[in-house]
Amino acid sequence: MSQTESATPSASGPLPEGAGADGKESGPRQRSVRVVMGGLLIAMLLAMLDNMIVGTAMPTIVGELGGLDHLAWVVTAYTLATAASTPIWGKLGDMYGRKGIFLTSIVLFLIGSAASGAAQSMDQLIAFRAFQGLGAGGLMVGVMAIIGELIPPRERGKYQGMIAGVMAIAMIGGPLVGGSITDNWGWRWSFYINLPIGAVALAVVTTVLHLPKKRSQGRIDYLGGVLLTVSITSLVLLTTWGGTEYAWGSVQIIGLLVLGLATLAAFVWSETRAPEPIMPLRIFRNRNFSLISVVGFLVGFTMFGAMTFLPLYQQTVQGASATNSGLLLLPMLLAMMAVSMVAGRVTTATGRYKVFPIVGGALITVGLVLLSTMGVGTTRFTSGLYMAVLGAGMGFIMQITMLIAQNSVEMRDIGVGSSSATLFRTIGGSFGVSLFGALFSHKVQHSMESAPGGAAAMKGGAQLDPATIAKFPAGLKDAYFHAVSSGTHTVFLWGAIVSVLGFVAAWFLVETPLRGGPGAKPKAASEPEDEPLLADAL
Image (cartoon, rainbow, N blue to C red; front, side):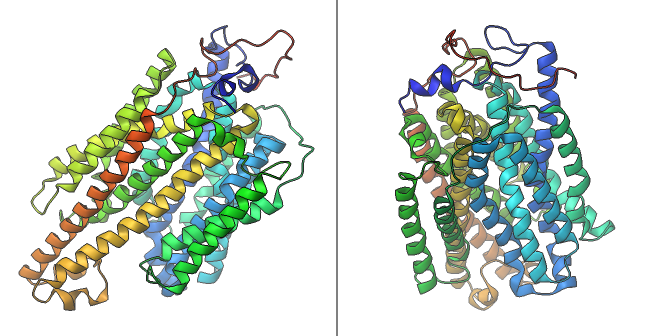
């Protein structure tokens, strides 16, 4: 598909009911969109908030259910199921209609939440978390795909601030809410809390959202789905276990790498022959889509790495509590939300967007370089300024990547386009956390081995909890603080190097007109009118 084809009227989708000739929204339509957006954002909050709430409850869960050696699988099972199901949910929405598929994912997520809260053993909890992850895979993709079908790209920028706000609420509020729920109601309510929130999302989406019904005559690409699932699972397990459960050069890790690459190659081959491929290769013929997929992967790689090691630095070196370390991320999250809102408004007003990934890539690189200079004596104010620079870069690029991805595919592929963009960012994050974790642990271990008594202190692992560190002699404690600072310096410096690749890739984007704006071609008179998307009764 050429650049011109990606912006043609056949891909433009329904013109919003109540909209003018320029595609801009008028009163009733705008109110309807906002009501629907409320339901969609609640569903997004469910998916993003869950892991952060559950994370604070894990010590209590282990205390009651036991199974400490299976602790990591509570998170891994959820992550694996989410990543593996993401492309499948996107394709099902394209084939059979987005509303029904989205509602199904919400129901599965809520069933998994209820079952997880009722789990009587760690094995049950892991199984139910995997089921919950299947639903979560459809939540994020469903939200993005529905927004892509509901709102033209030219108008979508004004809603970016809402999405960024939900991300900030989840990142900050998750640990606070999780700790409060666990202390006052018990760990099971960390899962049960999803039920009333999910019920609201179900009610709003069911009653207000109206999308044209679809019924594909093609068969589901079962072979492609199996091959892609095996490939994603292998690669996620590789990055999760590499350097922790197994050495990077072990038979298990090498085997996962070979299996992941072999099934990926088989998947690509099968997609060229499937009548209804899970991930149509035609979407990658669009230059913008391929480039923004690379940018999304690299942003996920650097962003999740930074988000993982910043709290560790704050808790260890700066002496912040677990709760306060979340609050100390506010400069980054608020900057991300504010810049995202501004970038969205400018995109809506001007239709220009190429500058944002470029500026965002530059700011992310600068922010990571600044963070790499943090040491034992760095103040919280200084680190907050550095985080604000990183957050501003993320705000320029986070939602714009999804907008460009959706604008680069035809409406029939909006689901797989959204799921692919989400998947690349997720896989990038998985690789980033794993590889940065290996770099960090190696650097800390190496630094501590040169300190008196350091080798003995590190026998239990490269990362120690604050209570244990507080019992160290003054000299050993100072050595550990310097070791952690050295580790974070390495992580952020390598993150900056990786982010340069995203900055370079952004320069090669082509600024094609956004659908729904003055640059898009009008419909031909022979083309049928589209059905209205939303109820006007609001």
